[in-house]
Image (tube, rainbow, N blue to C red; front, side):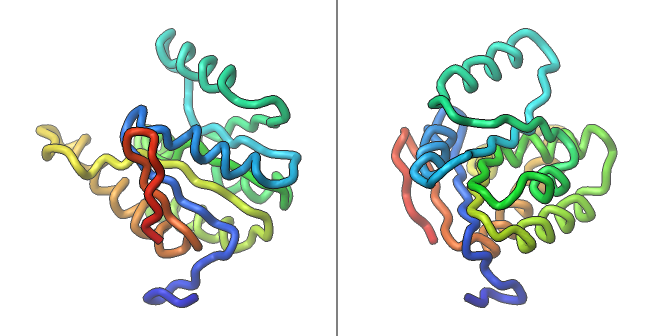
Length: 175
């Protein structure tokens, strides 16, 4: 399916939502409905105790059978390395944060991610935080992050065969 200058990638699903919207649970359900083995590509970095607790809780909430891969920066390489089975990436906005804090070039990283998605034959579910529905942040870094996140999600939505927005634990299909 053509959309603009891009071709939708059949096995790609994008799941967006706000904090605690149910997006990860919904995305995990999409992946576990497929035959395994399942790969969970985690982009979070445990910078403090609170984040370590969040990561542990995410892991505890998953059904058994997941193989976890840590990829805080090189998401494209992780996608290429981990075969053709079902993959869940959680989350794109944490990955973007890591890219920005490491002073890496965001457009280059995004182009690499898009190329990796187009090269994969297996199903992949991408999770991201929708951050564009709130107030305009007061500082330049937060505004730059919000703008990059919006562009990231728009570009991946064009590539995705289907897109969902989760609100209050309810998935809404938008594409």
